[in-house]
Length: 358
Ligand code: ADP
Ligand code: MG
Image 1 (spheres, helix red, strand yellow):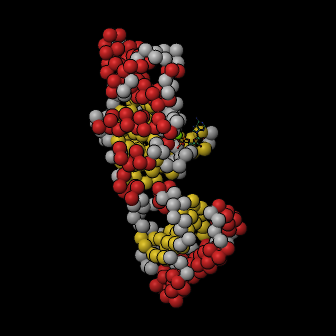
Image 2 (cartoon, helix red, strand yellow):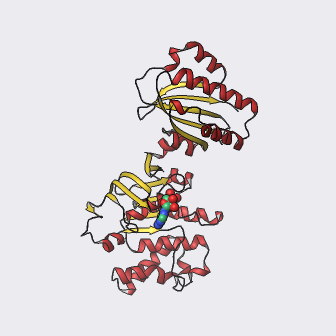
Image 3 (cartoon, rainbow, N blue to C red):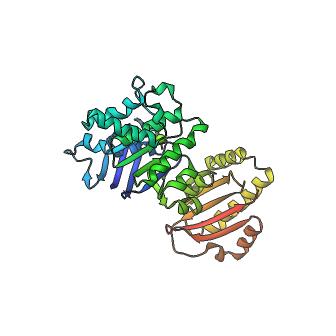
């Protein structure tokens, strides 16, 4: 239904979408998760052309949206959008809010539009509010109206941008359950959400966005049970993490030490824990990793769920366990931490991961 190729978008020289690629089939329910500011809303807005991408391609049912000759209003009508703030017309009744699009844009006769609207209001459990004004309704009810309004346009796909994040917590469930019901009808949906349990239950696939890309994607089980890449792991397992990319000679940079110290401060690591980390860390990099590679990606993190802390070093090269070259050092390292393992990541990189118990 939707194919996205090398999509790019910048705002004022800041690259927000760097290279987004995805294929979304009919009837799929894709949840887009990730830290804020990583371009999730921008991606949705580019999909229905509320933003003009700078480059790349979007095919919607095989039609290139960014083509000069594309019929943008017609395409946009096929993509419903539900926003964080419901954007209902305050001076129109609920029924008028739901029928105005079909009457004005699809030229439906009023009686037909009304009949359909009442059906949809029933579906979202608000048929008794047809003649109310939006201001008389709770946030949760307004969002359910906004969903009915999107459906009234008979879209092929619905894009949800954090549909529950502006709601009082007591109203989140009523909106999520309407979306879950809709999912069962076979509607194609793309949902940006911070509701992880919901994303997990309702989705056929999860996109984890980071750095303006779909950094990792998979089934809900894959992403939530066994995420593979460091930033996904950090996000899912709620690890507070610092990341560095370094050539060997920058190893002892003051800013690395400062950020590691700030991390330790945030999580109240004791002097003893810091000293232990420092010794193992220095020894691992100097004696185990740097002899085999000069260029590494380095992650230092503290888990907010179990308090464990540690570091991971990733690099590219032949699959040779660097601990085996220095068995005595490896023994000393392993005696001072919970685990120190070498492995190959699923995307083919080499990794040494060292974890300490709290
Ligand atoms: P997310 O939805 O993942 O939180 P957004 O797509 O809203 O992220 O935003 C990504 C980045 O793009 C943010 O840094 C944001 O400030 C910036 N941004 C988004 N829209 C605009 C805009 N219209 N003009 C300038 N900057 C924008
Ligand atoms: Mg957003």
